[in-house]
Amino acid sequence: MQTQQTPLINPFGVELDLEKGLMRGAKNHLVRRASDMRGYYADAAALQRLIGEENDPVHYEVFEVPVPENYGHLMYCISTLRPGLVGQEYFMTKGHYHSIPNTAEIYLCLRGEGYMVMKTAEGKFATERMTRGRMVYVPPFWAHRSVNTGTSEPLVSFCAYPAEAGHNYGDIAVQGFPKRLFAKNGECVVA
Ligand code: F6R
Ligand code: ZN
Image 1 (cartoon, rainbow, N blue to C red):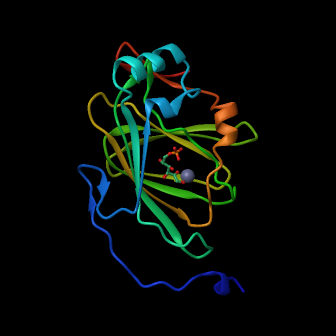
Image 2: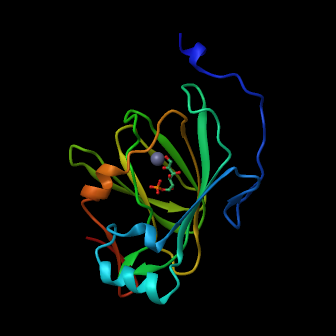
């Protein structure tokens, strides 16, 4: 039965800094810089300039206090995506499907503004606004990427998803998403 695959652990609590967008005592702290984003932006030359001339800035950080990656547990994280542009394209996360595709995810936006950009393997595409206090439900089977469309604030969100879900980056690294988010004359344009 499923319960035999679900390790019993003790309850715990975690302190979050909602303003700074970090999780105290996080055991996993992922930092992705511009140089980790090669191949993801439309303007590869602009990304190279950021890496070479602006000291390879941090794009985003993810904080986790991990739980067993088994059915029944919930993984959760704080994701903090800096503001910025690569050419005219807003800073964004790599984006991924879950390795177990029929697993959903909830994102609660805590600070900043942006969009969750989503697609399915069958060609559906959707965006959902992310602003403080707004929750985005990413249904099973939808690849997801967050984009910071703000000019000065980080886009901070809390996410939760089935702990066994895993991450499949390969398909997005190859195919990308059908549309990108650009800043044109101070407006966000999806193209
Ligand atoms: C977990 C999840 C988020 C992202 C994070 C970074 O399933 O969706 O925690 O992992 O926002 O984005 P990626 O993983 O696409 O680099
Ligand atoms: Zn995810």
